[in-house]
Each structure stands twice: as structure tokens, then as C-alpha cells.
Amino acid sequence: MPKNVRIKAKPAEGSGPTSGRAVSRRAPELAQSAIAFFNDYGASQVSLTKLSSHLKMTRGHLQYHFATNNDLYTALFELLDKDIRDVVSYRPPADSIEAIVQHQIQIQDCLWRHRYFFRDLDFLVHADRAIFNGYARLHEWVAGELVALAAHSHTALKIHIVYPEQLYGVAAENLWLMWTSRIRWEAISKGKKEMRGAKLDAFLRRLVADTFTFLAPFAPTAVRSGLLQSLDVGLSNLERAESRTKK
Image (cartoon, rainbow, N blue to C red):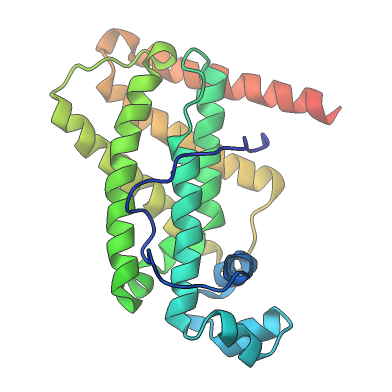
């Protein structure tokens, strides 16, 4: 698995569901520590009492940082919102298929790290209206960024606008739904079984392969096969690079 690039993105206007809500200084750190617990047990099954035990602190101490379950859900969503915006807004070198493939893997890895959210989406967006609104904004923002990312990457991917521009927004939205649905189903089917190493790499690469297959019809007929061949080349080059790193 290639190491994630350190990405610094400009904060998106209106990002996050709770602009202006006061939080303790340690709240983001504690929320980060809670992600694995949520991935294992699911949002609806995690209480402040269970989480405080997992974090080896008293419930009262935890409630100093998160007065209610919804405060905790909000802090977790804000981490997800920031992570997704950071990785999706990154622009890999447009003339390097390897960099574009690696970036796609990093996007899928980010979604997988926050898989509890997509698995428990119905519960979380109805737990707090602010999370509902925040996710709706994130969804819309991602669709726009994916269109911009495709335009940025057209040199290596050889994707040209051959359909009405508004269709690409619909395609980008459906691509996001495909990603999150696959993450959701995998999280539901695996339960508490953690995917690591080669199994996780294979799953992330499969998602990237599905992405390229999804994009192929949007490329001119003459370059569709080349698009999928580019994916094979990018994955092969990445695997060779990783093998050399391990030696």
C-alpha cells in the first residue's frame, strides 16, 4: 500500500456541520481515538459509557468533552469532513497515471477509515440535523471536485468532454454513491473483522478498477481501451515500486 501523501487543502467555505459550536481542545483527539471503536461496534451501539471504558477514562471526564452522544457524532463527522476534503481536493501530477491511480487509492483508503459513517449513515444523519446538512454539503462538494479532478487528469487519462457538461455532474455524483455504497456493504459484511495488509490493498485496488471501468464510457470510443490499459500500467508500476521499497 503506498504511503498517503501529506495533503494540505484550503478549508472549504461552509464545511463541517457545526461552525461556531464550542468544543474542548482535546475533543478532536478523542474523536480520532474513537473511530476504530465505532468501526467495530457501529454508531447506534456506542454509548458514552462504553466509549469512556474503551478510552480508559471516566464517563464524567468524557462528558466534559462531549456532553451528549450527538456532540460525539458531530466531532466524528467533522473529522470525516476534513479528511475527505483534504484528500479529494489534492491534485496529482496530471501527466502521471501512477500518481492518479495512487491518489484514487488514497481516496478509497480515507473512506474505508471512516466506514462506520457510511455503514450507519441513516442513523447518524437523523441523529442530528446539523450532520444531515453537513453531509448534504459534503456530497455536493465532492461531486463538483470529482468533475474538476477529471478535467485536471485528462492528460494522463485521455478523457475528453464528449457529452453535455451537466451529465458529468450526474456521473460524478453517481461515482460517489458507488464508492460509498461499496464501502458500506463491505463494512456491513465484514462486521468486526478488520481488513489489513494484502486484503485491504486488494479491496482498495478493486474500487479503483471499478472507478476506471465506470469512467470508460465517458471517454471517446477510440481511447476507452487505452484508459483501462492505463489503469493496469498504473497499478503494475505501483506494485513494482512497493516491492522495491520492501526489499
